[in-house]
Image 1 (cartoon, one colour):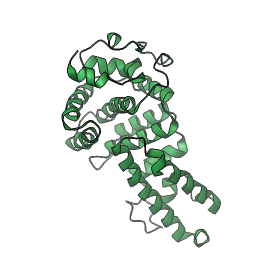
Image 2 (cartoon, one colour; image 1 turned 120 degrees about the vertical axis):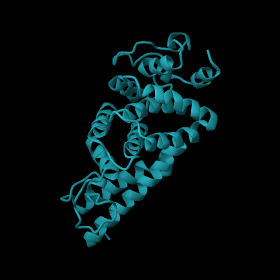
Image 3 (cartoon, one colour; image 1 turned 90 degrees about the horizontal axis):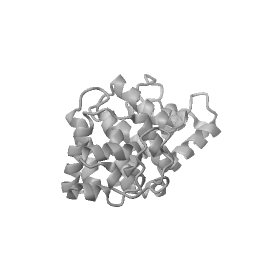
Length: 261
């Protein structure tokens, strides 16, 4: 086994089993069945209750995220330089320059292959909490929009991933609006690329003042520093950026609703 393979597998728990382990093992040129005594090699969507259940570390999460990154990057049939640069920054911050570049090469190979997104997401879902999955989807939207636009194929893949990971419609609406923001509503004089501030909070314009306040508090809690403290530096940075958008949306609504001030 190469030194890089040994390094990547070192400390991995559930990520070396199931479909994620099979994908990583294939591209590292090593049969996953011989890499760990905790390996679970069933790659079906029902094979996620093996020995790796609930043994995840940040390294597991990063490995799983890498597989989903490849799925999003290949969704529109073209891997753009802006997407690679976005991912490269993430890898260098989390793996260091030398190893980050090695992981990037593996990622480039993954993009060329079919990825069983439903099975990968099933493995992630059973081994991570909702908050982690939520921030993974949020980060993946950033990759989809790294070139300044979202293709329909990318949005379809992102929606599938969110559904497979069990992200609620309320949360998906908020993530989608903050990153895509196709709203043409200009009533708020909002400079946030015409994003609908209500959708940013995951609600509609008919929401009561109390519902607006509750929605804001729910979103603020998701991005509170304590909630993302154990995540990667890039996910923490993304959380800080998204919190700014949430605050901006809430301020826009308060300008239209004096009763909220």
